[in-house]
Image 1 (tube, rainbow, N blue to C red):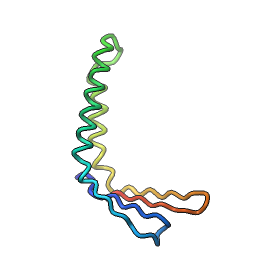
Image 2 (image 1 turned 45 degrees about the vertical axis):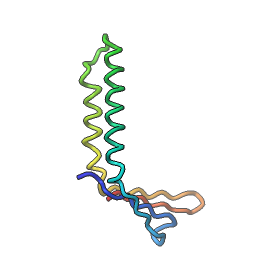
Image 3 (image 1 turned 135 degrees about the horizontal axis):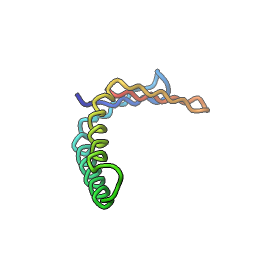
Image 4 (image 1 turned 30 degrees about the horizontal axis):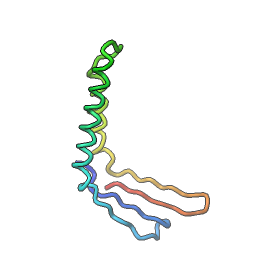
Length: 91
């Protein structure tokens, strides 16, 4: 299942979490993936004498699309030198 929420908390663990719905962005992600795929396909076709087959560049896009569901549960904890903390969690 693809991630549905992005929780952003600024100011450490005591900060108020700001939930950002990722499911609204799914159609945009798919359109961007399609545009990148067409770009890779055009690039690969323009280099007809490349050493690798055309399918390899499209295989990377397929792998990227398959990795998106595995982002669920990722926690990013960033601390600035001034002491500010930002937590980002993908649910």
